[in-house]
Length: 189
Image (cartoon, rainbow, N blue to C red; front, top):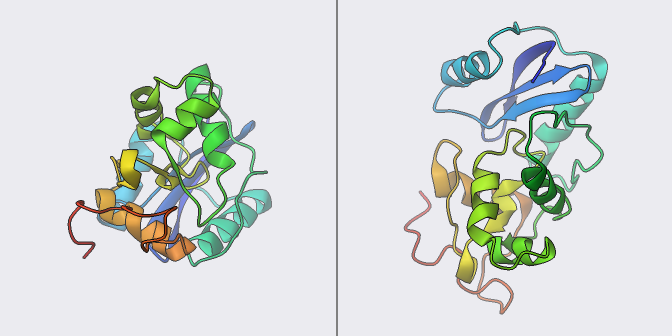
């Protein structure tokens, strides 16, 4: 994927990275264990791209991501993503994930059903595990069966996923809609 530049930016959950190119955002990176690791990850993902000052349209997206990770309700659904190298199945999964509003969740099975492929929950999870645009493609809003966390490839795993859902105000109580959310996943320290 072609990128013109990348930069890091601070959020409530740590330093995120963002890369842009002529066809839109080329990638977004949730925080690693340190800003230096996030920077190194961005350099690995975009080896032919240097760190740069983002153009105004990317600065506007950064501000929106920062607000989302502080509890904002922007779904970022209009942000243009360069999916040139993203497989078609993944693109379909990402489109469904992008339609999940902040503070709401679906399961991998529910996403698979919306795709018209009810047996594809595992493939949905794999597609989300390769998501190059988190949190703009909000893979953290997709849970395992029984509303358990399931996998999460960002640093911190399920704890990061839970933190992001808490920031968004996702109901984590015992209502029928959310019963079992993260039950059995261990403490969220």
